[in-house]
Length: 204
Length: 204
Image (cartoon, rainbow over all chains, first blue to last red):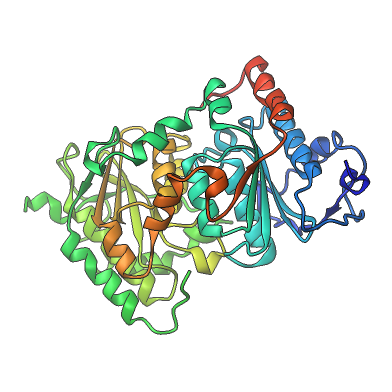
């Protein structure tokens, strides 16, 4: 391993005072203790390459998330120019938010930190292959690359059956286990017409 | 149309003081004006059936979202026992949050309102067929039913090409347009082991 991988830069994100997710600094600090070396203002020389240290940190965060009872066994990082822009751990049960998967939490924080709804030139490190929701979120956020450690099969053997959702995506809407029924299509088309006619809109 | 469809109950959700999404009451009020009849404490008798009035309200919210420049042309509602638990509109660009699709916003609000990470016995009304991210969020939230108005093709013709993401889901991770590379699988398996061994965890 290249010596510079052993330590890395950490881009300090100003926490929002009202943000429960970001304010849990004690939790983050505990997780950081499991990483060799410090995490602030340290040299990291190979921004063009994947760094296993980022994944190791994500693994440490996920372990701490489990052991502290903060949520499911998943964590993710967003990295830009060799620095961590944001970190996320699974917070589904503690926040009563079924969308608070590690990747979604990290993407939301990173976008807030860089004040953009696109993660251009960013890398996402996640401890597990993304579920369909997170994969969709990744495509909307458009990072440059994704690195993952465990596979969907590993997650399934731990009780997280993302495969079911992947299978449902292939089924016609009205045949899914959660039935999806179309109504009022004609009425709804006025919305897209208004969008097309709207000036000064922000495409995304 | 059954007369009772013309008016419906609205479950008042206590806004969180710090929540930008919920606090925009003026925006919600404007949209409400487009619905015939009042929305508070009115009788709604057919909880077992789909109500087109809920979809009409979602359409009105989406139109208002476009016209007020608040985001993309999408809105969604969560309904339980004939009452609206939460509403969401697309807020991607105003919040710098690529995950702030209408369905995700509505799901997060509804779960917060009912203090649960599952939307048991709830219906989701959305003005457009969900994208893969939102479909995944729906499966994690597990509402009973989904009703949608416009199709994915309608959205594509307005410039929202969810089909691209649906296609990418079918491609092997390392062949996707956003390359997805596996690293450190062995190290990551300690996380799932810790999860299996953890007592007093909350499955989800």
